Image (cartoon, rainbow, N blue to C red; front, side, top):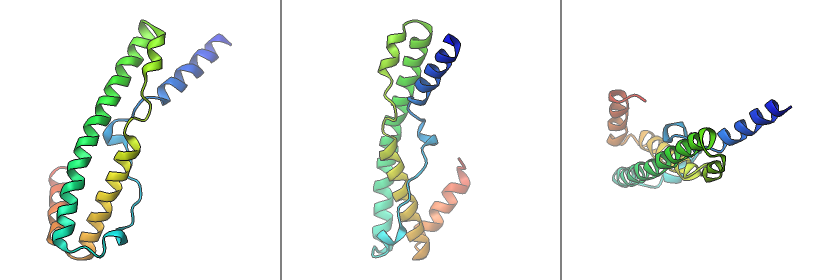
Length: 128
């Protein structure tokens, strides 16, 4: 019984850890939202969203690292450290930003904007 309780507590604790930025899936954002933008406006918006994604990804990575340290300390040394797990961190904001980026990319493809080809080439050069 104690072993089952300990395993359940550990599983609950592990699920509270912040996800790595790469593990955060994009939320759906409709490309129609950006259909009235020109190619130049789409490019500018992509740059802004991309910068914001990098910033929030750094914050999410810090949350993940902090949670990993608290988890290790909590399991190995001092269980009250488990109360310092941050949970999801900036996950919802990052998911929304990734969704906006994907929608802007789709809008660029639909409008046949040059930036769509640049994104495709960059993705081919740096696959995830």
